[in-house]
Amino acid sequence: TGMPPDFVSFSASGGVHITSSGAHSRLRPEAVESLYYLHEATGDSRYREQGYAIFKAMMRSAKVGSAYATIRDVRSQVRHRDELPSWFFAETMKYFYLLFAPRGTVDLSKFVFNTQAHPLRVFQGP
Image (tube, rainbow, N blue to C red; front, side, top):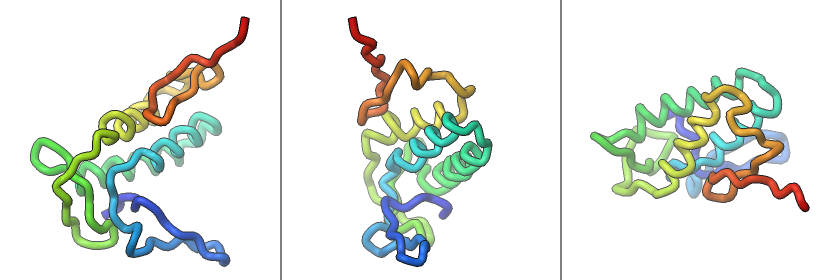
């Protein structure tokens, strides 16, 4: 499907494997969030390209009618679950926006994101 699974396992030889227990996708933000931070830190366009590949896969695989749905197994033909987690719009789509926005749209020396991807101003002290 091109979608990232909810989790993977790493082998001692350096390989990455999608396990049966982690092959689903609940449209979590962590992969896109990581790409956003990597792009902000390095300016390397490959992180945007990887994010765009995930975005296209999500639009192709998770879109159902006028909404989105989670995916049972990213390794096989798309089968959806009848659910749309609240974080999909609140976090996942926000990180896609930030990834594709001009670098520095949010000044990361002045703001941090909480676990719900809300920007909070860094306290500078008195």
